[in-house]
Length: 325
Ligand code: T6T
Image 1: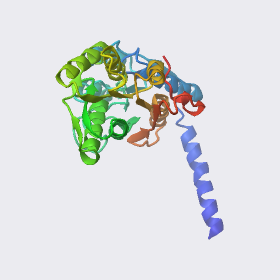
Image 2 (image 1 turned 90 degrees about the horizontal axis):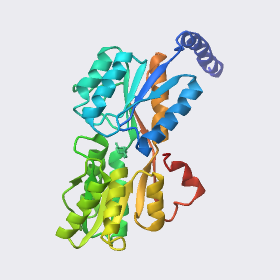
Image 3 (image 1 turned 45 degrees about the vertical axis):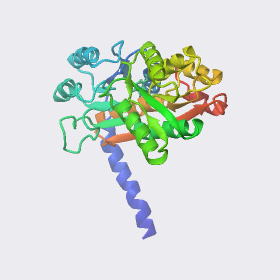
C-alpha cells in the first residue's frame, strides 16, 4: 500500500507536467494599473510585480493616472484594453464606478485580477453581483488592519476620549474596510472611546491637515486620529503638529513611506500599519501568469502587514517593509 501510495502521485506528476509544459505562455505582456502612479504604496507594489516578471521572463507595464480618481482611471483602463494585454492587474479606485469599465476588459477576453482594492462586494466568482467576474483579489486584510489600528490607538490614549478617522472617499474598498474594522473594534472592546464623524480628504494631505484643525476647534479635548492611508496619515500628523498638539493627540497611520517612518522617529506619528505592497504585486503577477497557463487560482489571496512604532522602527528586521519612492 505504501509503495502504491508513493508511486501514484509521481506518475500523475509526470503526466501533468507534460500537459503543463504545452501551456507555458509565451511573450506575456501584463499591464498593472495602480490607484495612482506617484504613491509610494503603488511604486512598491510595482517593485514586487517587476521581481515576479523577471523570475518568469515576462513583461509587466505599469500605467496609471496621477490622482486617485475613477474619472481619471477609466480612460487609462480603456486605452489599455484597446492594446489588449494578456492580463490586467488593477487597483480599482471605486467599488461601483469601475465595474462597467472592467467588464469591457473581461468581455474582450482579458483576464482581470484586482490588487489592493476590489469592485462589487469583493467576493469574486461566486455567481453573485455584477462585479463578480474578476478572477482573483490580492490585498491586505483591511478590516483587520483597522482593528489593529484601533487597538494601537486605545492603548496610547488610555482607553478613553474622542477620536476620528481620516478617510480618502467613500466607495474605496480598502478605506471603507479599515474604517469599519476600526469602529467595530472600538465599539466591541473599548466602549469609552467616542468616534467622531469621519473626515473625507480626497487623498489630499493638506485637506487632511486642515480638517484636523477644524475638528480640534469643535473638540478641544480630541485625543486621537486614525489616518487610514498614506496621505490621510501624513496630513493628519501635519495638522496635529501645526496645532502644537503632538504631545496630546495620538496619530495612528496606515502605510509606511519613508516620511511616515521619519514622523514616527520624531514623534509626529505614534504607530503605523505598514502593508506589504511588494507582496501584493509579486503574487498579483504570479496569479495572472498561472491563469494564462491554464491553472486554477485562489479567488482571494491575503497579504500581511507589520505594525511600526518607535520601539521597532529602527530594527533591521522591519527595514524591508519601508516603501520605495
Ligand atoms: O493605503 C494605500 C492603499 O491600500 C489604498 O487603497 C489607497 O491609499 C494607499 O495607496 C496609500 O496612499
